[in-house]
Image (cartoon, rainbow, N blue to C red; front, side, top):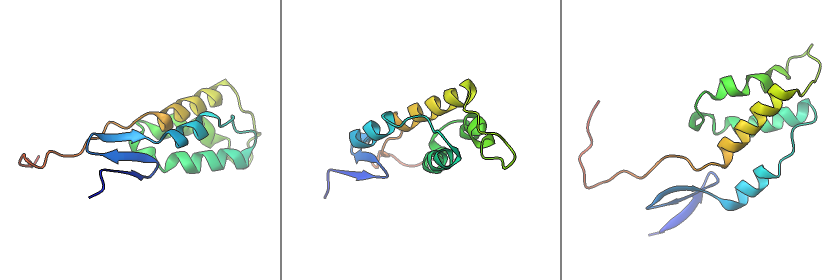
Length: 108
C-alpha cells in the first residue's frame, strides 16, 4: 500500500492532509490580478477549493463584482484584502483527518 500520496494539491497520509509545498510556493508568488481575465483565472482556481473555505462567496464578493459587464476594473483595498484572504486560505492546511476505522460510526 502507498503510505503517502498527492491528491488535489495536498499530501495525504495516515497523519491527515498537508498542503503540498510546490503548490504553496506558486500561490504565494501569485501577484494581485491586474485585469478581468486574471480575476476569472484566480477565482476559477480558488472556487475549486471553496467547500473548504468558510464563507468563500462572501470573501470573494469584491472580486466577483469586478466581473460585472458594465463595471470599471478598480482593484481597490477591499479587493486586495479579499485576494490576500483567499490566497492565505489556499496555502493553509485543511483540518481533515482520516477516520479511525477501529471505532464504530455514529449516525447523526
